[in-house]
Amino acid sequence: MKDRILIIGSSGQIGTSLVMNLRKIYGNNNVIASDIRPSSNEVMDSGPFEELDILNEQLLRKIVKKHRITQVYLLAALLSATAEKDIEFGWKLNIRSHSHVLDLAKDGLIKKIFWPSSIAVFGPTTPKENTPQYTIMEPNTVYGISKQAGERWNEYYFNKFGVDIRSLRYPGLVGWRAKAGGGTTDYAVNIFHQAIKNKQYESFLSENTRLPMMYMPDAIRATIELMEAPFERVKIRSSYNLAGISFTPEEIAAEVSKHIPNFEMSYNPDFRQKIADSWPSSVDDSHAKKDWGWKLEYDLEKLTSDMIKNLKKQYKITV
Ligand code: NAD
Ligand code: SER
Image (cartoon, rainbow, N blue to C red; front, side, top):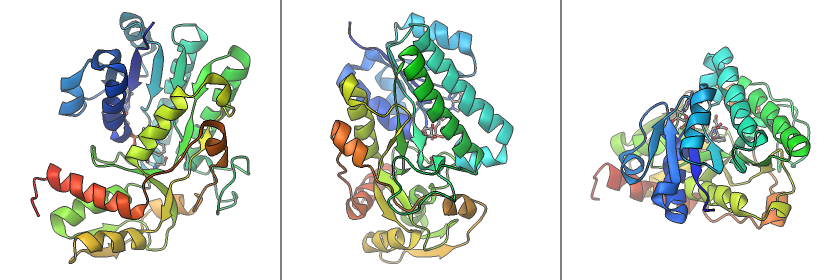
């Protein structure tokens, strides 16, 4: 039987890219987008969309049965900065959505799950440079705690119920198809929009805050490669470290200036600085490389020129 895929949270930063990539591989009608709000025109016009609040477990099960879904990608969540502003709802959404999807597989309704973790599973006591796969993990944000709990549930459901769950600890992601959704790493998306529109940007992280980041096409490719890897090659069921490119706001600003010469960057750190300071500067993803052949493609230079090219097209700027 051909796989039929449900993406939950398809209107966000990752979902808008992931849906289009999966539709190319599996066929438009086999990839069902879903969210509490409409997705991009591209997503809405190219295949099926269901309005779904993931907290509504009954509706989730109805949609899964209606479309004979075999795989679920769960992207709905509150990100780090937004979750800090409403810790009860952040916890409720991030934890319940996950258990609703895990239980679909436990009850035999679906075969495979993708659920993203994050560098936010690490905390201030974690080694900061080249952070190992297995290390001290004492996250101090509600988002990070929910991701760490999620990783434990992943492993538990795999060991106890044989659920084929696959997961990546994404670095901060940078893409042009959708605006960023409430994360601490969003400055690296916002900088491009502001540089193109206003030739200036005020960063909410300080100039020398080094974080692991990644361009969206690499993240989407990593996700699909992990999901398509043979079962026995996926040896880590909690979540894989995934390294991208580590850079600071000052370094990305310098790269943007090469394309937009009068660009001016200023710095005004807010509450997100403390969150960023608790995360690693770089991570070691040797397990992903060894187990299923992961390889990064975009460096900061390539990321910057591709972002600017695509956003200029989106804003219809011809220079
Ligand atoms: P996003 O905020 O851009 O998108 C999340 C989507 O979920 C939104 O479209 C939102 O409308 C939807 N949503 C919210 N509540 C919902 C509900 N109750 N039911 C259904 N949909 C709902 O986030 P993103 O950047 O696309 O991230 C997706 C996932 O990847 C999250 O789990 C996030 O933690 C993880 N992640 C993202 C990054 C990153 O840098 N973007 C890094 C690490 C991990
Ligand atoms: N990029 C995400 C955030 O900043 C981390 O998962 O919230």
